Amino acid sequence: MRAANSALEAISDPIERARETSNLLRLWPELHWLVREVRQHAVIAAHGQGRTFDEIGAEIGTSGYRASQISRGK
Image (spheres, rainbow, N blue to C red):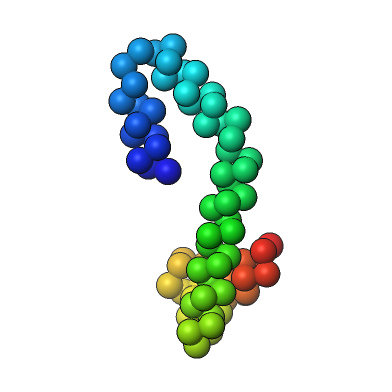
């Protein structure tokens, strides 16, 4: 995400920069879903390796309850 943002900021022509930013924003709902899916799979994998949801939550900056919710796609 930061790389994409940096790439947008690097576009010198302001119209092109605005157009490309608009394109990214139009894609955001789909991209947001994909990023959430990556996080869900990572939490599931960590849990599959034997970590508890409390441990996972602490490591990713949330609660164990929230880590459990993430694993269920919520």
